[in-house]
Length: 342
Image (cartoon, rainbow, N blue to C red):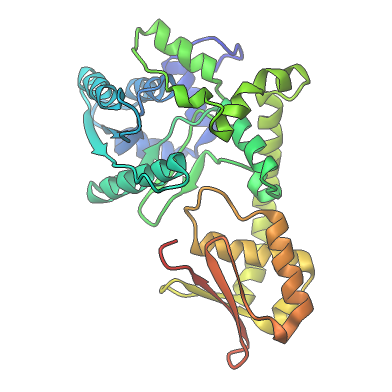
């Protein structure tokens, strides 16, 4: 891929991105099999769909998935535009409709959760194991700032991965994490691909919109998407190494069950270093609530670890990250239960 931020991408660029971001055996499986692409109608996802259509082999099957969230008057027309784009490419298009609940506090978060759920269910029915997403370098930059502001620790600040397991049946693929939004806009312009702009992306009503508004000022101070991307890459490597070292320890003291609960050996837990207790708590939360948009904040995990360490057998229980933790003296375990509906 070219290093110039505003230069458009072509087939050679997506091939290089795939080779760099995705393991070779998976590339062949994707290129020759069936996969889905989430397309909103924005420049990022429209460019990704076009690039993937250039990249895939003739006999492979690409599904474009798009959602009418009903949040704006123009959304129904935008879904039709995506369907027309898919037809021109000669690929399948599945349209979803979501009706927002007026009582929901965070409409954007609820819409995101519903979008993933509907797409995942479709992929499961169609036996599609991979869903491509158009998250790019600027998204990674914003995610880092958002999580930093929310108090995330090193794991949370590792942000989005190129390959991420969503469920037993579905894996998310993000090949554009090193590509800027401007490069994707230029791709659409060059290829005469029509796209839409969502005004909520820059709205000061939402935190992410406020982050975008401050991006230029941060870049002038040297806090650029490229530098944040490099830091995120290092954090991801650190997390992978630490995860491999901790895997054996987790296996020794944690027992996961198929019915939505985990058991942690009590004596090993309370006698462990506080940092290990934090890692165990974070691991269990991730296992029981894998699809939460935001990881539990590090300071909250640390507070719970300290509470367990101090109170020992007097620990009365706590809830964090959609998981209930309870001490069971008879079983000599800390029981972790996924909250109902979480």
